[in-house]
Structure formats: structure tokens, C-alpha cells
Length: 253
Image (cartoon, rainbow, N blue to C red):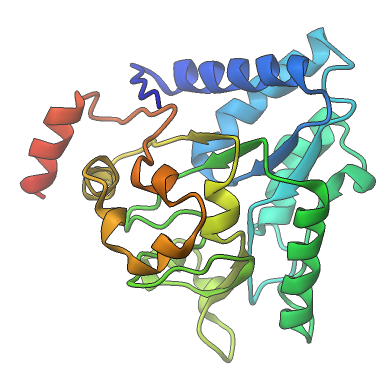
């Protein structure tokens, strides 16, 4: 495990992109699980720059969408699908046959979850998984809870996760999304955990103190030891504090 702190968001983004480019030179068809949101946007921009200088580097790369909002259609400008098409898939010229996506607004969600899980198993373990960290500690749409889902699943979202977009709460049922489960995430060969932005001291404190050890359900996962050691591969925070200072600051929040 390697925790790196950066003075700027651009430095973090460049470092993460460098790691991905290096791994691609070793395994051309690596399986990449892509997060959305503010944290990875700069990294994707740096990857697009690499594409211009090394046009064939991404020609065999396989990409999977990490999660997707329910309620709103995939064509909605705030959807994860729209984000990835704009920031990652189009810039890297990724065709449909190398992109695993899904739709949370079809009638049979159980069948859709089973289909995605089967396709993931057919491809094999994720080679690089990009993660961000929500202010309440959620990873992908895996909200903090006593029990976490192992496989690809429908997740009911906390109000703090959807508060940035009122349209996510306009459905007839509670806001939800589809996402990769903790087993798929933790069996990844490399996790790049990007922590950016203010207001996440408590969440990163939970990660640094390994509070995930208290979640009994995760002990059934084959790679539980990896979960206990979960740490950011790449991290940055607006406060520009050391780990001890982050923990100290968190206690004051």
C-alpha cells in the first residue's frame, strides 16, 4: 500500500494517469473500472493527453462503468454514462465492444444485475479500479452500513449522496443506483483511491483507522485481508495536512 499526498489536484491527477499508462504498457487489455465525479476528472484529462502522444496505448483497454444513478435516464446530462462518454470513452476512442455498461431504469433490475455480474466474471478480476470517497464515507454507491453487498447490486442511496441534484429524488421510490459490490472492488489487482475536496476528514479518518474491520459481512469475502488494509493509493485534500493532522482535525469536526 502506498499513500501519497499532493499539494495540488493537478499533481494528483498526473500521478494517477502515469500509474495507469505504466500498467497499460505491461497489460494492453487491462480491465479498468471507472468512477465518476470531480475526483477523477483531472486524471481522465491527463489520460486523454497520453492518448494524443501514444495513440495506440488504449487500443485494447476494457472499461467498465462503476455505478449509475437510478431515477434519471442514462441520457441525462448528470448521469454517470454521460460523464464517462464525455471525459473518458470519447477521448480514448473506446468502442462499445470494450465497454461494460448497464441501465438502472429497465423493468427487471435483478436480471440486469445478474447480467453485469456474469460479464464481470467472464472478463476476470478488475485490473485497475478507480475509487473516490463520499463525504459520508460511501465508496461507489456502497453506503456505510453494518452489512455491505458483495456482488453487483441495486443500492438505496443516502440523502447526503443525492443532495447535489434534486432530480435524483423525484422518483416514486427512494433514490437508488446500481453499482459494483465490495467483493468486485476489493479483488481488483490495483485500486487507485482518489480523495479530494473539503469536508471529507471524517470519512478519511474512518479509512485510515480501518473502521471497515467492524463490518462483519465483509469477513465472508475471500480477500478480507485486503479490505482490512484498505488505504488510498493516491490521495490529496484541500487542507494539505499529514495523516496525523487529518485525524486530529477530524476529531474537531
